[in-house]
Length: 176
Image (cartoon, rainbow, N blue to C red; front, side, top):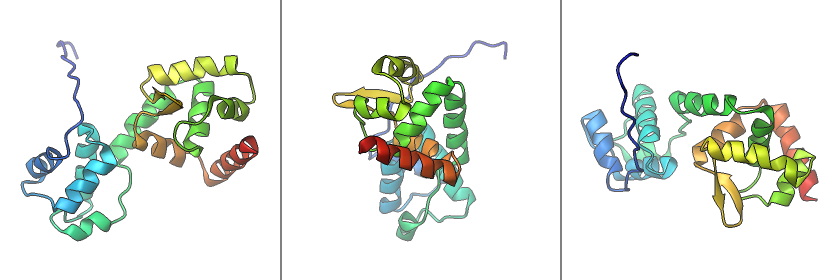
């Protein structure tokens, strides 16, 4: 606690680097389809790769077999906790915005977000800026999108089924 800490900015792994990390973690290479799926599901984010491989290994999934690439993989608990803690630090308005966006397709139009939030475009600015500053969203030419697919998936799975159904209904009404 009292020692200085150096924070390192890790860049995403390249597709060819993901199998190297997996082999270093497990002591054996993963099957190429498994390594490809790990990369695809994590976009090469080293933390996400590490957590996913740890979860799969602890669940007894044999990553050396190509059949493991077809298994049902869940979001690792460590990833879920990190994303959840980042979302929990946001205001209620920013959290509501993220939950609404999780139901929508990538890069929803601002008009649709305003309709879902029930306010004006001016009301949307503070929660959008907050989510952008937290690194959960990123600007795109045609709107906003989650910084990573696992962020969207984690937020989408967080509410109860009735709450998700209500969000889907509100989204359909806003689109109409």
